[in-house]
Image (tube, rainbow, N blue to C red; front, side, top):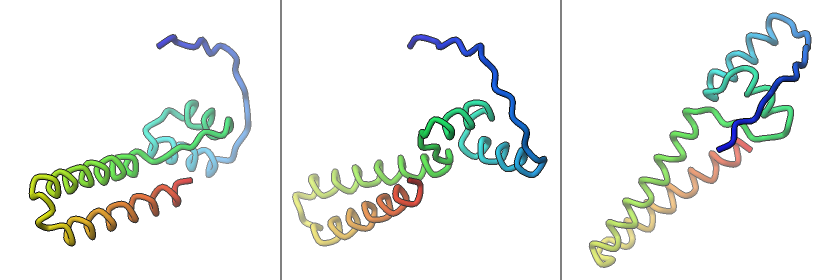
Length: 99
């Protein structure tokens, strides 16, 4: 991946409370303050790192439930279907909240 040279600076004034809020949000998302502000200003979606991990885990669990369904040849189809529905609805709700 080609590295982009960022050599232009923007200066802005914020209150100490605003600075702390920006610092906390950047930390939660796993980004530097510069990267966090740049993404937010340019309209990119910034998700907290912990919630990205939750979404990744929900998708992994869904794959495991699907694998269980296939391996059992549908023996537990009611249970696997309800588990997949629960995982999917929670993942969609989390994605909507983050949008």
